[in-house]
Image (cartoon, rainbow over all chains, first blue to last red):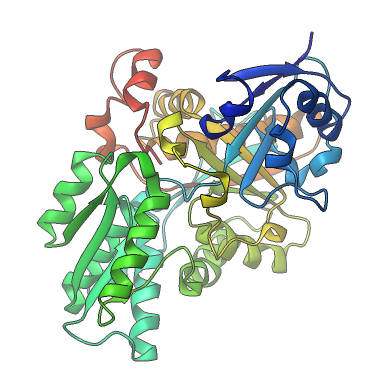
Length: 93
Length: 316
């Protein structure tokens, strides 16, 4: 089993249009490196040159925001689900 | 006290009710803060009143002025009521994919609505409002996403009410939009109870709502301070709808879909506490009732049908 990664519309140019891709890694950082091998450029849209998550990108592991669980060091296991979303202003405010 | 001199004075002071049937154990309890009991039926009455009063006190808002606000619903309705009672004109910028009930209520209050494209979501409503503000320097944009009075309303009212009613509160869970409820209530509770967990539940919409052209066009509200939060969950439409229905079936509470998302996160932390053998008192915010969402299809048919109806809509 691998880790499913859901890709937002605006980043599907890096995944040949695929809504979700599979990858592997013991941490989010490792997963993103693994993905970048098959989908070059994707990691660069998510991680800054300083090695932090881009301000307007949110990444969730099993629906929980990784910024509160160790950011790129967040541990991953097979079967986890990763969701990448752009930051938006939200709904009925 | 249950007698008030005017509707504006009846803002806040909402009930906190236990949910014994949904609570995982007798010592791991869920409590619902019924913000639908505010004058226009949502938590946004608190922020609207505080933002208007702050602008009046600062002298930036004078009788007869026009208020401009990007809002897809509850804040607009709350501001429309306050504007009506205090003598202001209101112009709302809202995405076109918001429910017909909201438009009807705003129109009844006399507010003017400028529609922003559905594909741009709230981000584009915010951008359009900022452009309009630049074109009309005499209009007053309260701007709930960056107005400290929004968070202060919760620091001064919601937080103290919760602590008074639930002194042993261990978790506070609310929806994340402007972030005002979580920032204000969270800061207050953390000052009084340093170990409290402040948990955000963020609605995850269908893809259309994230129709940005570029990641760099993303938006994080100016009020947002991540250090106030302990954890943040993203809750999809299906889970939110499932919990909204469960809340009604099991506890008799008719809430809007965003409350279902909040309940989903509240149940997650409550069950974690139970598994770990810890006691917990989890308070969460019911932002509004379900009335304004009946036309969306959220409450009819199967869960799958309701989910399909909400695709592309801003349900929270």
